[in-house]
Length: 487
Image 1 (cartoon, rainbow, N blue to C red):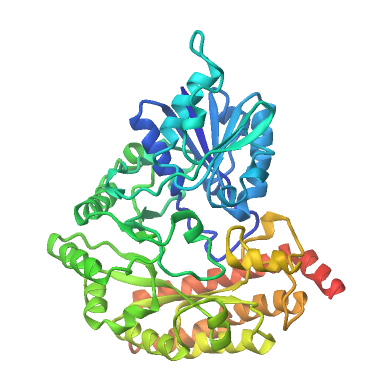
Image 2: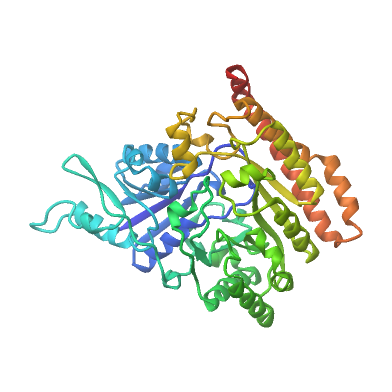
């Protein structure tokens, strides 16, 4: 049978608009291909595609969504069903709200679907074309994490178990992606799942659990070897389905440095084997306490870390259950910079302890500590999180349009600030951070301490971010004005 997997893109623009990095659908597609299914993958972030043509020969369509893409995912599901196609949906959003998703899809696979996708397809084959004397929907009851309809009612099977052996998953096959794959300039590599932390606004643990699971070193090195092979091959576009000049590797683990001993060993091996592409990842600020780790990361060619700093308000850090202090953040930033690694700082604004002053204090903190790039994110109640449950219970969620749940729109009633002020001042603070004047001043100041090439790259990022934010302001003028009149 043939399955077409679709990853919708979020509406509008954001800081990472230019970075296209398909992930979950690539793993599932590669699993299905190894099981001898015909697979095609369409990622809308790579460019628009003709849906009718894409699903024309599909026996079933799989749609993967996060909360900000759920609305569009439901529209795609409705369109596919209108074309006579069966639809299965998966991802963090539908894992949290399977009953909602079942209004649009025939099936929902909750949680990690790596081990359930093939049993589901086997059951689907039997259900669509029952064996002689067999009951329709034969086998669906035995697929963990599956939601389906039986006798007019929705049935939810027990939650699928987490994949404990990540090395059992196949290497991702980029050739499954259709469309303008030349837009992919980053090689995504996943070396772990899970997170022991429990930040109140984060949906990671709801999808992947609290227990860390890691790939072995050799598998991680093979991922990097695959990246190098694609870069070196002049036929990269034909063989791998991606452009033949991949700029860098991104370890998209939720906390790549969770096991510092493991990362140190990996960095040493990367250096010893010459596998040192430019790389980045998502880190916890506590790496600033480990000088050996930082030195090895830099030696292996780490150039920037995406770090969830979240807030410079101590009371907000407590509310978020973020186990770090502002002082630890500042010391960590200093040590990371001392080792020549840049920082992309992510802050979440709008807690019950935040005011307008907090927003601008955050912007000044980022400037003072010479953070290379930032995201000032608006607190967003993602389904499945404590923040969502608390605000829902208190009746403070004001907007159910999932396309606005991108951390750039206010969709709840803040406590210490109006909705309009949170929206307006957060975007304004980010625009101020990325102002051309600030960028030029930082560029000149860095000429004496960092390589010219690095300075030019960061300046280019900032100027592009400034243009994106200006576009965002124009696109969302009506939304912001509506908040003002409701304030």
